[in-house]
Amino acid sequence: MRVGSDVTLEIFSHCVSYPNRLDPTKAPVLLTLVCRSWRELALGAPRLWTTLSLQCKKVPWPVVRRAFELSRKCSILLSLVKIPTTVALDSLPTTRIRELRLENVQYCQLGELNGVAFPVLVHLSIELSVSTAIDPFSGVSSLPITAFKRAPNLQHVYIEGILEGYQPKHYIDLPWVQLRTLMIEHPGFPSIKAFHKVISCCPNLTYLQFPRISPRPINQTSPRKASPKLLLSGLQRLFVKTSSGIQDIFTSFSMPSLTCIYIDVAFLDDIEELGRTLAHVSTLRTLGLAGGISYDEDFIDRILLACRSLDVLHVKGNAGATALIGLLLRTGGLQRVESLTRLCMDYNGKCFPDIALLSLLNGGLRGTGLEEEDSCFTLSLGANDALADKLLNLLEKNFTGSPDITLFYDENTLYLSRAFSFWTAVPHLHLRPVNNLSNRADSSWLPSWSPHTHPRLKWLK
Image (cartoon, rainbow, N blue to C red; front, side, top):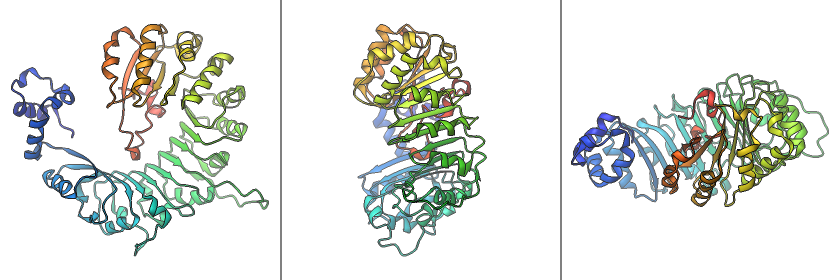
């Protein structure tokens, strides 16, 4: 729930003996001390609510419906997991749902929403069940699903579980022209051309997750008729999950405003092709890398140096981040990429490269743009308490470098008290919360490589 300070004070006046001693800005901590009284007040006074967030998994449906009734007219952020087939989705208060996430839902259940309007829906995330992927049209009388066509404010869409060989429009009809964010988890579009047809309906996108594209047939010898290049004038962020034909993406789409590219592939068979492609993206400021990319001297020569105006480099994965640290130290790569002002690395596994990291922080950044006052070295540790505790010990005992360090953390992890205990001992350490990773439809699950993380854009607040 999101409430203002005046409402928070009213809550405290009902739940706490001495409300004058409490600071409304500390509401997340204080409400845990008055949870029982708060629950009674919240259920009895729905006028205090402005937004209701419900995550329903194995919750009796009568309880969910009761929550809807108590919420009166407030906006609803709703997440439903494994919805029983006995539940009628058309009974949802669709006129108040602002964010809707349906996980492991049967395709036939979505058919119940045809004819239903979603006037305030902004974020939509649909993850079809495995059985749907096997037999998507089982029990469906009309295709495609048209419910979300009547969502005049819908802007951010995430779709997962589409059967190979089919396009999203075979399943769900959306107000494509108004979409700003489109993320598709698809096992394999037949071609770039097929995806071109889908995106041609979305001229106003600012963020696009490019799905996996099926490899071209080896025996394909006849020349293909090239489609006209599609202009996506507002597209700023591109997430690529295909290892074949990356160059085809840029020959099929014109993206003059593109500033951020994230590449997450199982393997990258042609690093030279990728370098040539990125060299022509003059607006590129942020490059994210993950998956099976091999980091060697060719990587620096053909990729990093090709991105002449690169500000932010983000590497995800223990093995990749460790290899890149060693490469940068060994070859002086950071000094050669003069435009780089931020280095971001994700460590979400069980190990941590103590020596390599400390060498990089304490000496490897000297002579690079990362020593400037507004520069930052970012680490994202997820919810790994043991790993985070080890890192904090290392920083407390060994870190003497000047670059700022931003540590992203999960709000539910246990190591926060440990981090705050030596906050003053590491003056260049900044802690930033990670948004709910399950809410992928609004792209907030990728905080550290977003172009908004750049210090000059002041996203980290």
